[in-house]
Length: 78
Image (tube, rainbow, N blue to C red; front, side, top):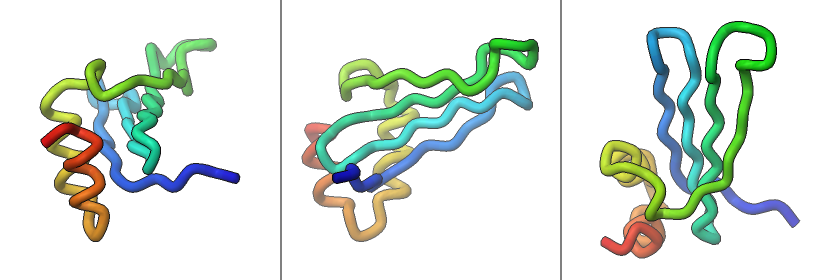
């Protein structure tokens, strides 16, 4: 059974490198990012918790939550 994505934050680092966060209904956060444009530098992933993300990402989650706004706020502790 797959987890349902309920909010996201899509950003770029240095103009060309992905820096994306995805929040799932169970509170899991997947951070997908690029370290560099060179071989081995693209498409890295980490699983994070709420305490490991900054306020900008939390605000993006709230703004993108749509119908899941109450669940997102609960998961963020707001």
